[in-house]
Length: 143
Length: 109
Ligand SMILES: Nc1ncnc2c1ncn2[C@@H]1O[C@H](COP(=O)(O)OP(=O)(O)O)[C@@H](O)[C@H]1O
Ligand SMILES: [Mg+2]
Image (cartoon, rainbow over all chains, first blue to last red; front, top):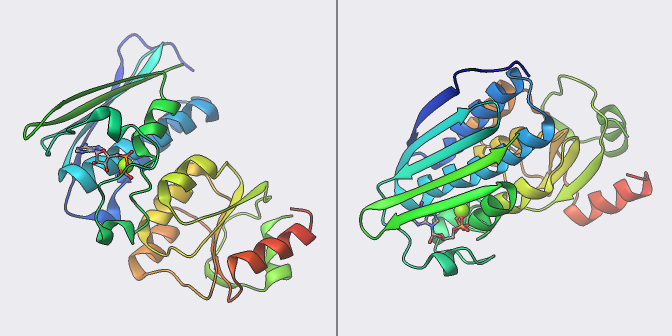
């Protein structure tokens, strides 16, 4: 990969109304990272971590924004929403825990593996959340 | 096994045609998107009965060789569009997931 002085940034508004197109920002980011010549392992980690975070904003928080920056050392993914917030992060992080409603589950979401996968496939993850205000998840993947 | 061999072995309906004759490196069978997202590896055949557009997002992100819909399931219209836009091969068979898996195991996949 070329040496970069300035980080490369991508911004997306993630629609919370349309479940069927959920994941679209992650699909675009994957293509961009390929064009940057990043390794398949890095791209896989970013794809899984960002997809899960993007889906969570759509199915739990009525959408939000996704900001990705790529520099020489790492990829940073910031997912911010103004949804309901997460009352108990410890519980939400447990594998299989999900509050997804039946109509969402029938689409294949709600496995309760999103947050655990985000933690597993990122090198660093931070969740800031406030009830009734929103949630911001920051993930870093080192190159 | 390549996708062309899969076509001969199963005679599936071609829902979205392949762009390349990719090698099938492995198989994942399952319907929950988060599970598939972390288990489908590059070059895998993903067997599922889910037929919405989200399946194509996951198949593309995971770089699956193809999606095989079991039990006669076919893609919803917007999902078909997503498959074509992203160049993802999709097949459909009347067989159950179990029948497909045992057949593929017989081929040494
Ligand atoms: N951005 C978010 N806003 C509000 N709640 C969230 C958010 N992300 C996750 N959650 C809560 O954490 C739970 C677990 O999330 P996750 O592990 O991704 O599983 P799933 O999305 O399949 O339910 C969700 O069911 C939801 O209650
Ligand atoms: Mg989730």
